[in-house]
Amino acid sequence: IIIPMLKPALIITAQAALYRVRKREANNLVSTVSLMLAFQLPWADVAYRSVWAVVLNLFIYLMNDYCDIERDLGSPQKDQAKARYMADNRRAAQVALLGLGAALLVSALLHSNLLVIAMVANTVVVWSYSAWFKQVAIVDVILMAICGVTISLPGLPVGDPMGLKVAAILGIICASFEVIQVVRDEPGDRASGVTTTAVLLGITTSQWLFRAIVVAAAAYVTLVVGSWLGLAFLAALLFPLTPAKADRTWDLCRMLFGGIWLGVLVQTYLGWLG
Image (cartoon, rainbow, N blue to C red; front, side, top):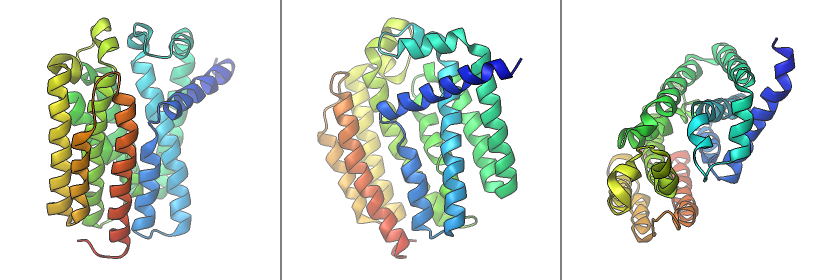
């Protein structure tokens, strides 16, 4: 029963990965690896955790796509060929999820409790977001902030509180990107009846929410993490945010926030923070 499903399962997994690459949504892998380097983890550990993080990303992307089959089929902005293929091969998608999940759990148990926690936390957060709370305004943004922290767990040192403090920056950044994403998808979501934050609040109020998150990021990095680089977040207040310009703002934020993140990690590596 399972063997005939292996080919469509592999195709579905590859489609999920390629779609995220095209949409430039795989930033967390770079963040996870950079955390390992900033906290000077052993190279063998970096390699193990990096491979594990790649598989974790495939797992949560596929989980999200599986939960979104019907929504994606009803949205003209989504990849219809990808959504239709998964809809026609639901059992194969389940096999892919079970296979990836089993591989993650076994390899996490062989490594540390930290990876087990990362596996469980990301499964709960992403499944609850994709299956239920994506349609609940504001909660979608909050869950993405939580996911920003949980997805970075594979890159954290064990027992160092500074790791979580730095990882929380990713949570705030993910919240801002979630607002950009729901604004980008607002026309399609509204047409398909999905009540995201952008649909409920409207574009103008969502723009102000994005600005509030940016200010929160600047305050947190400056006052809590202890890096004046946090003030650079305020430059994002000048970025336009509409459905038509959201992709451009996404790219601008990637460059700006990525630069700030790199600076904070360099300071962490040099021992200037904490």
